[in-house]
Length: 353
Image (tube, rainbow, N blue to C red; front, side, top):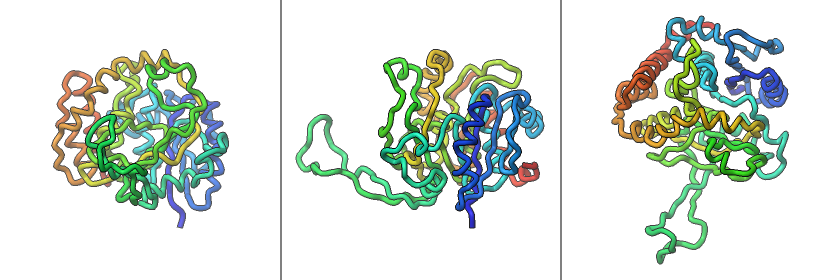
């Protein structure tokens, strides 16, 4: 029986999405193990291009968001990759076995790189295996009691043991060629193109946080009510929300808090994709400036919340009510989070694909 997977891709560039479709055609639509659907979210008021007709591809724009969500459509930001949250909800409605999101400039690794990991298990199967506890990973088994020097008794050989993942709900895939740097780091490097072999295949430890990048993610559908990528970029009227490029990072912090509370694990590492485009570093610096300040303490505000919920949806609702950050943006954000989690009810299945 084929595994049902739904892929969500935001785009604003016709050339990029056409290249994306061509590069992934074999993996997504000629894969004997998967029944794959693709959701393309075009970040425009109306479609500026047409995608070749394919019953497995759905192509949406702002009009579709407004039609489906009505007066609540404001919770989906515009002019930002975080518009993909709408696609997550549409994917959840399809009741797949696995939801995946990719950026439109991420391609199959083996098309560009033939070294380490290039012939690792195929992309969808690798994500699926991670979510189904079939991957054995290294986990640190010894911790030093001091810094810089080796205390007596600490083994000299590799201090890791093999563990089998258990109850994994989300897998964070990585990227070669153009890594996910912030603008400050990117400016400090003379050249970042072509970077490979820096990934770590790991389980993110309980009570630790990590920078979740939305370029290459897969999760079990029950995680979706807590994977809202927040209010970034602009609102539907074109006004700035004041933050950008932190939607995935902050969503990752919130979701890790919930996963730890409910006993889920999160893995990071394989599969790796080839990321082919470096965004404008100066534009990113401007977009990230305000968020970088908040990012230093946002995780502490989430970490301080005492969760009591028994499901992902209950926990997300708790966070939306208990988040201590105040001010206009945060009050509106908490309201948007509450509306988002309310979308995930049995009646939501009444919407058409």
